[in-house]
Length: 340
Image 1 (cartoon, rainbow, N blue to C red):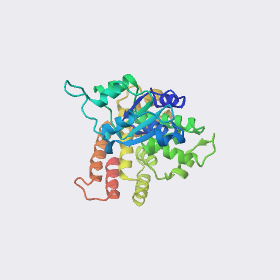
Image 2 (tube, rainbow, N blue to C red):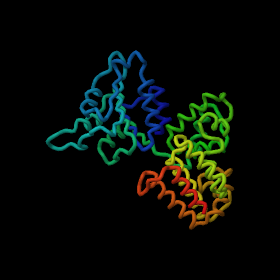
Image 3 (cartoon, rainbow, N blue to C red):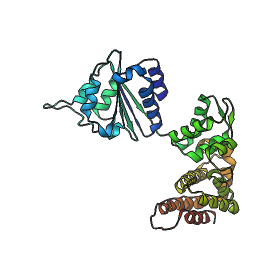
Image 4 (cartoon, rainbow, N blue to C red):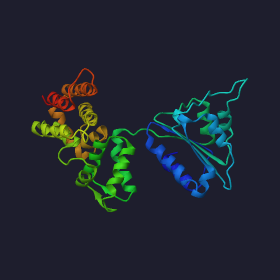
């Protein structure tokens, strides 16, 4: 089931006694968890019939004792275990001498209890009997991290669901600038939409005005300037970054440049260089293919490989490994090596 499927069933009061929400991408886990905590039960029932626990501070028997209670003056009670990856789950099997109380409950859960485990930043071991018991008697949802090339489509879908539109250039600007942290992207989009009329198309200018991305001096423009080998523009942008380090942290810049030059490298590998095929292989809009064609002409295969090596080297230096230079000085060194 997808997160949307789970939410739809919950809204329609189609409940399961067990839910395991796990995976590397916390956005969808939080989305379901927030609904369970704030909207599943009426406010009048929450006091007696809702228990919220945190894995780091919770013993498994505390979870089970809460789950085994019957609801008071209601059909259901909710037990929500947040940060379940921090909880000590105990052994995963029964033996002849002892019984695993968790496994026993998962194999025969109380129908009037909705027990939800939020297991974030990693996958639950599917080989475990606890996993198999939840999967058999409830719902298991894995929230997988999105690849970078899927982020523009996710942004467009999110915007569309909210009743807005967005042009391609604005979409890719957001994807390049914000990375693949869906929670961060959603927060920025929500702030952006507060200042735009429903139904209106979101443009680059609105993004510059509302998200704090400089119109001329941003990572997106730096990539374009590097692709063109525009030395003057590159230096102007780097000087701006040095003067505004909080808005343009080096780790963000290096991450985006690594993605950009990885796509330039992929361009060199692609045999069918028709615009449609390149767009598919590189995971970008056809609108940007000419930019990558130009970059590939300016940086051959060997040079592109060296640039990716430079980016890794300066990522380590930015973290203090074999370097005492400030971020501004490191970025200027790196830009010189990339262009020359």
